[in-house]
Length: 336
Image 1 (cartoon, rainbow, N blue to C red):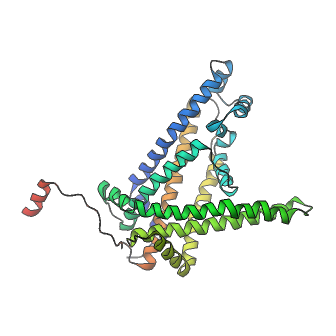
Image 2 (cartoon, rainbow, N blue to C red):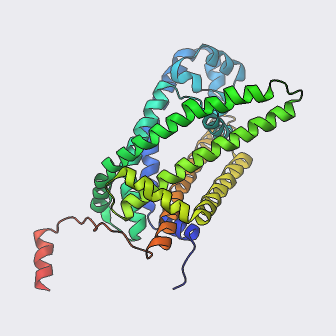
Image 3 (cartoon, rainbow, N blue to C red):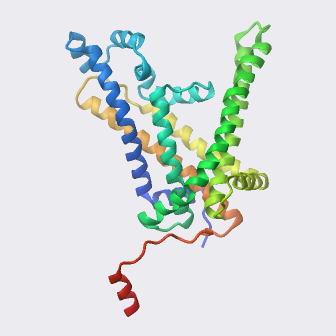
C-alpha cells in the first residue's frame, strides 16, 4: 500500500472522525453563548426604546457604535468594528503578536475552553493515532487517562509562554526597538526593524508550539507518564527530523493563510436585517468550523508524521479502552 504523506493522511484522519469536529463546534458555541447573552443585555440597556434602536435593528449605525464603545466597560469594550467579517481574524493575529491581554470575561471563557480542550486532546490524539473508531467510552477514557499528564504539560508550557510575553516581548518591542529606532530618520527602516522583531517573536512562539504539540503526541502514542520526559522526547524528535516537522507545519500554516485570505475576500459585511443578516451569521459560523477543522488537521497530520518516522502507521502503546460487554453480549460471544 502506497504511503500517504502526513498532510494528506492528516486530513483523512480528521474527516474519518466527523463527530470530533462537530463536538468541538458545539462546545465553542456553548462557551460563546453566555458572553453573547451578556453583550445582548448591555446593548439592550444602552438602546432602550429609542429611535436609534430601530435604526440599529435594520443595519449598522457607526455613529451610535462609536458612542457605545466610548462608554462601554468590560465585555462591551470588545464590541468594535474589528469584530466584523475578516477584520476579526486580522485583529486576533495582531493581538497575539502585540501581547495584548484579554479582558476578564473573555479570559475566563478562554480558560474554560483550554481546560476542556486539554481533556479532549488525549482522546483526539488517541483516536487519530489508532485510525479506527474507539467509541464514546474509549474516547473519553483516553481523555481521562491523559488529562492530568496534559495539565502538567500545560503548566510547563504556561511558564514558557509567560516568560516570552512578560520578558522577551518587552525586551524586543520596548527596549531594543526603542534603542534601535531612536535615531532613525525614516519610518520605513523603523517598520523593517519592527517586522524583524515580529518574525523573531513569532519564531519563538512557533518553536514552543511545535515542541508541546509533539510532546502531547509522544505522551499519547508511547503512553508516557512524565510531562518533562515528553518535552525532552519531543525536542529529540524535532532535532532529528527538523525538515519534515517544519515543512508540515509550514504546509498547515499556508492552508490557514489561504483560508484567512479567502475569508478576507468573501466575508460579507453586515447590512440590512433579515435574510442578509442571517446569511452573514451563517458565513461566520462556517468560517469558525473551518478553523476548527484546520486545528484538528494540525494534530492529525503531526501524529501521522510522528508515526511514519518512528513507528508503523497505526502504532500506539496504550491498549484501547473498551467498555464492558453486557451479559447478553458476553453470553452470545461464549456461545460462538
